[in-house]
Length: 536
View 1: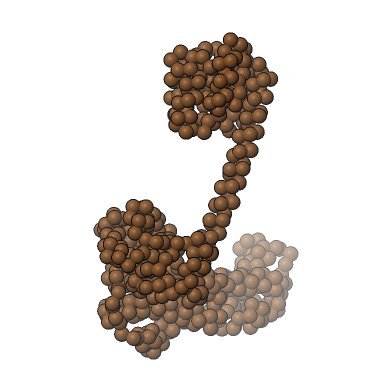
View 2 (view 1 turned 180 degrees about the horizontal axis):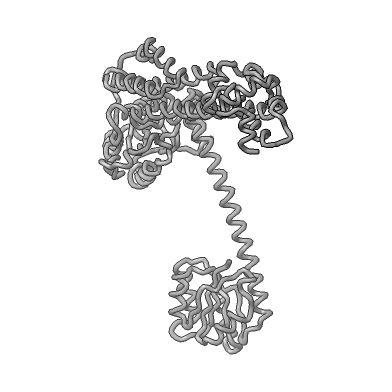
């Protein structure tokens, strides 16, 4: 809708213009009326309309002066001037100030309609052209951003691509890199109460990054790129050698500027990578920043962790995660013993966490090793792990986002517990289904010589296992259930005076009348004849 204001010192003229055409149907919305030039100007500043219909002669401030004031404020507003015959020459001068035209009083419906249609079509055409241009520019910028992110991700994570040709990179990704210092800074926000972090709280870091870009870093840096790398917020800085110290001081003030020190719900950790002399070596800076982010599991979140110059023992996961512990974990995984697995994982991670000589990244590497083991061990058992808890990569990303050892342990425990829950529920459902199938079979074949083996073959189970399952689900062994089913039917048949006891026995599956009578008395407490007499 085109927002419109009507200004005329005669109220009845405003009302006439308002009612003479169906404004809404034509795509216009009258947002306000004013009855003199000064109040009209205030209405314009308040409502920011796209179209104003104004009288040419008004007390205080006339239409020409009103248009001048609006133009001085550089507002993009279209004007139509309303004038009488006596003001015709005066109204023509209004065209010099950008009026689209004038309408003579008394206002004619057709003339006004034609004007509005013309304005609407022109305005919409301009808007469509402008929107189309903005859309194309937006898509282009978005595409460049995606390519830029993908390029740096591949270089940081897969080691692909060759940094160094600044001119080519600047050209392809619309960057402004220059020779000087290069550095990566990573940020992550941990939710204190969360089991694991979803990566959706980076707005705090992004907000800092954007604000500081305008306030400080734009003045100090040649280039400043903000992007997402593996669920972390990353800033790539390129600045002159002489700005090293000022940039370093700025990084140390990040926590305070973000206002997160001591916050219980969110804690932001910032990890600067080492400063490198060219873009070709920028991955060294990224790798150190990653180690700093990982080190928050040892030193705690909510701080700047600068590991420049830190050295660690060259120890692999296999030495930390020993053979005996692996055997134990395999056993707990195979038996779906979640609590025992959780206790063992706590011990493994805390040994790494408490040893300052070990690379803190070993905690994450060990967690990934445990995740791999979980999928492999349960896969060997024929359990479709991906079908139950999803792909391993998804859990791997959650591990990366863990903000504490306890969150990481809880995450791995949750994966195993979900599999156990599904497996047990599924097993129970399969068991219940097998018993229901057998019970249904008995209801159709009770007259025949039905055996446990025959029933077990039908549901593809071991006879012994089916017998135990039947007892668990029904409270009776198979033969007990079969006998009870037959005898319940026999009690109903015995009420029929036309049927003899022997006939009833045969119809429920007992060819031997004496055995039928003996069994009936054992279960019911009286013989079939006595039962028949009781209810005859």
